[in-house]
Image 1: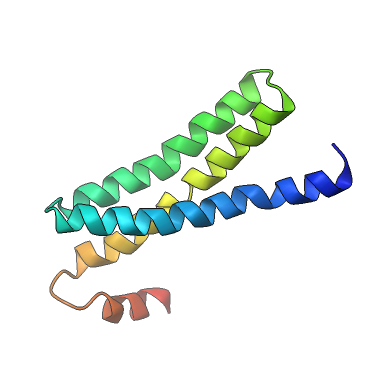
Image 2: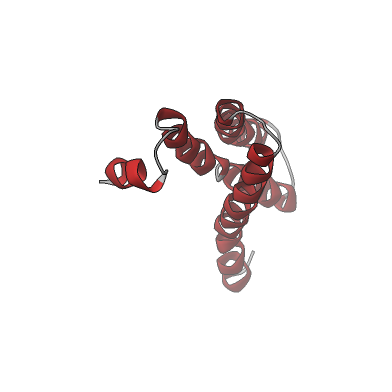
Length: 110
């Protein structure tokens, strides 16, 4: 792989993570609007953020794959780790359901 194409490919996992984070925000909002409890959404997102990359990286380490498949597994693994942010943000809402989320989030981020 030459230097130019490897530079472009090195950005791809983090772009995928950003896209997953944005998409998960909309998905979580829709699930909450349909009455799914936030605790279930949070647990699902946290599980996905841990198990998804783990599976991708174990396959990447254990199986001999082509260069393209290796890049795809890396992109998917890092991309799925973006669901962790939704789980963390929903945890604050779970802890303080009667307060506007921005108030405890300010203390949480400090």
